[in-house]
Length: 310
Ligand SMILES: Nc1nc2c(ncn2[C@@H]2O[C@H](COP(=O)(O)OP(=O)(O)OP(=O)(O)O)[C@@H](O)[C@H]2O)c(=O)[nH]1
Ligand SMILES: [Mg+2]
Image (cartoon, rainbow, N blue to C red; front, side, top):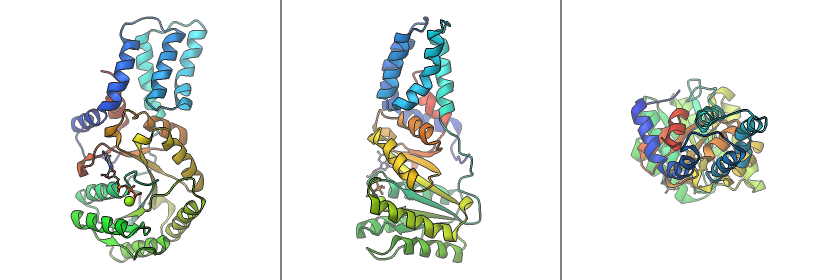
């Protein structure tokens, strides 16, 4: 597991960053779990509603609660105390673990970022570039968002701030060509990790998805599969729309992991569980604020204990 924080610091950051989700869930769940009593269908329905409202998603919530409903219907006794601890274990189980190292294996590995407009791709790349540099990796940032000149400038400014080279072409250039140049630059200068920034794109726009596929093809020609990680960046504040984004993007190209940003500003933290469970995707990092140190390696124990009431 890629980590650089002490356990207590990590748990504390999750707790502070996820306070909105916790507040929301605590208020509702405390009522449900307040007194230890026998669970009936009404209790489960209240729990169902709460989890759906926290953006855990209908499908995931039903998968989570149906086994308990069956128990209750079959007349088995289940106390709220038991339910609470089983629920915690089930939530942990729904969050998928990564089965590949991070950064990916090989002397040169490539992290390819995609997502809709404004989710936080570019700033996440800068934050992660800095984290990797601090851990001793050499990095290069690749400006494959050629859609706007300002996007290229934004990445260059970040490169200067974190002391990393940036490979860029002019506005309007073919993003595949920038990727080619970025990867060959890294090969030439023995750089460890390439971070590719791409233009924000709507998951429903055919031509933009085709462009994405083309970029991935360029990367595939140069880098073996095991040395790549294609990372979908999602904005937690968009709630259930993030599910639709994950569905469309993952049907176009292979997605290996997810980074969820802006968890700090929302009570929709449950989206992490829905995305990970629905698409079998590990969450690599979460964004808990705008500062560089606010990008935190995801830890499911810290996450679950941060969102459930004490
Ligand atoms: N509060 C908060 N803000 C964040 C987080 N991550 C990113 N942001 C902010 O989100 C805004 C958009 O970030 P960008 O990195 O430019 O987003 P992008 O996905 O590259 O945008 P496009 O290139 O236009 O598609 C910036 O103001 C970031 O500071 C986070 O975890 N928490
Ligand atoms: Mg950007």
